[in-house]
Length: 400
Ligand code: RFL
Image (cartoon, rainbow, N blue to C red):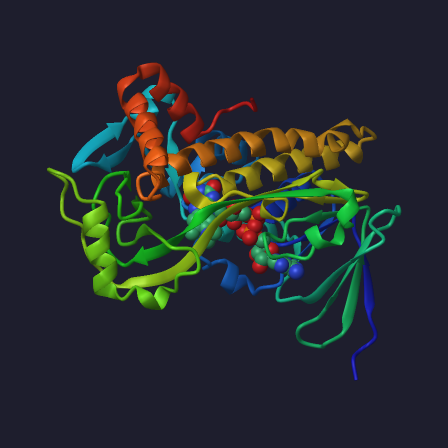
């Protein structure tokens, strides 16, 4: 028998404790707007889930402006350049010199850990972990609600609020709560997959290395002194089991090899997953009292390391809009979706551009390989092209 359900009243129900949900929760709580965070996984799980590593400087500054980047600023390394390797040669792009800005390298689990600690331990915020069967109700009325099953008692609970923030990522339930005729979902597939690897090994280069090779794209990214992320382009639908240790390292050495490059430091592979490279955008990102933020509203394949940055941008804009609403001004909420989508489409376009550079050589299509090489040569040969590229790669301060 299940226990009787209880009802909580709050101003904003936030579904999902990823970078979007936690940034929003912290900013709202700091501004005195009550909220409840509902998360499907345990706190321990989300604090360890490996994913992103690069945060753009504007996003770090914005988090710091809300007092949410103390540990990040203390511990994150910054990167000033990256390297393309192709035709056996190394080509460095000095992104910081070209753009005046840097990437911060801070693994997503560390950021999530900091944001949970700030919200729950620091500010006494209400976050409910491991909740099950989350459902959204009455999104078009004045009093929407979200119900869920308590993992311990099995009881159904209901949280009633003025607004619901759908921050539950690509596999959440919020996006599906919008009737199909009220939002357009545009999808795009790059037609490739990446084997995403985490190696227990020190980095073998100071910065990011992108290997452009006719066998497929390969990449190296530092994640810390003892952990390095690697990517290998693989056919869509490929299985990690097809990639035993020796095959991975042989292939990485081939695709990332170049004259004068230090050898790759080999180590055990602690993560090995295949990610299909695809994107989607939901327009508009708002429906009634529901506002989507982060991956629930738009997925950008991790080609250009943009997803978490967009999630933070959405969360900050949504927080502003909600805070303004509770002060009697709805302008921010009314323009929320449009404001987010401006940056979303910029980042989708850049990601698509970079994808062609990375995957053209291995596409098997001579024409695509030719245009991809032309893009690379323009980038390496023209300062104005390199400047424009660096600005987009590191992320622009203002929306274009
Ligand atoms: P998240 O992080 O997926 O968080 C959503 C949260 O919602 C929970 N959830 C639910 N909770 C309650 N009820 C439900 N029904 C729920 N369903 C799901 C989930 O458990 C989760 O805790 O979404 P958010 O906050 O929008 O953040 C988005 C980012 O996580 C994502 O865009 C980035 O990880 C993408 N990404 C990168 N982005 C960058 O900006 N820089 C990078 O360097 C970068 N590298 C990457 C990446 C993504 C990767 N993968 C795994 C796709 C590298 C990789 C390999």
